[in-house]
Amino acid sequence: MSGHISAKKGEIAERILLPGDPLRAKYIAETYLENPVCFNEVRGMYGFTGTYKGVPVSVMGTGMGVPSISIYARELMEEYDVKTLIRIGTGGSYDDNVNVGDLVISQGCCYTSSIMEYADLAGTYSAVADFELVYNANKIAKEMGLSAKVGLTVCNDLLYFDNKPEIAKQWNKYGVLGSEQEALGLYALASQFRRKAVMIMNVVVNIFKPEQKELTAEEREKELHNMITLALETAIAE
Image (tube, rainbow, N blue to C red; front, top):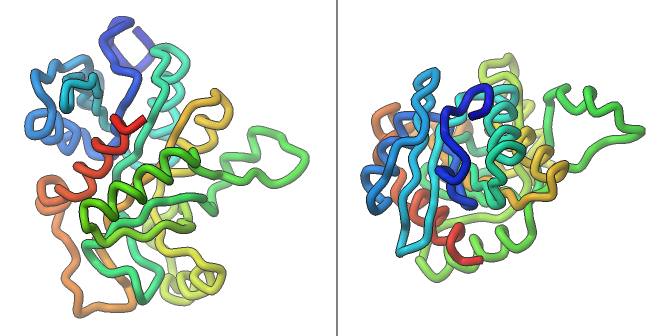
């Protein structure tokens, strides 16, 4: 067992999906995995292992924000030797061409978080996804006929902040498609431990298009089929 995960060695698959919401993890396990078995309930952060098309796959919640996902991702890699980590989550669009319901495959993650200061680097860290995972996710998305964009995202510590539209426009000026709050922690740790990671984001709000209805909390938990299926297909494509 690790500090926050009660699983025994061997109970977590080498491939894992990481939604922020533990209830979404439970829903994914019960809906998409064959014979799911719960390996963690510590702090209500559900984790399950089952199979998808015969391949062992795990799914576990990580909570919200870089500090929370950093705890779970590190323990999964360091204590349970997880090799492939795919974050699936929701976020906001910073681009007029990325609408509510679209998917974003984050090939690189800009960030406003100060967490990399702890690494004491003599420069600025570039948070990038694993190339093969990005390539496979993009290829599979096209085969599935999904509206998915590959590009930059930004990872913010704050969800609510002043002048959000102006800040979003400035990020988009440099090609950033949208924002979320966890990818930096995952990408940095995957780089450190030499593992594969990618973040697939489902857009639930576009601040420039208020006429597009924002997904509710219940819809976010249960109506993200395309993102979940894409992540599962990507996980077993290696």
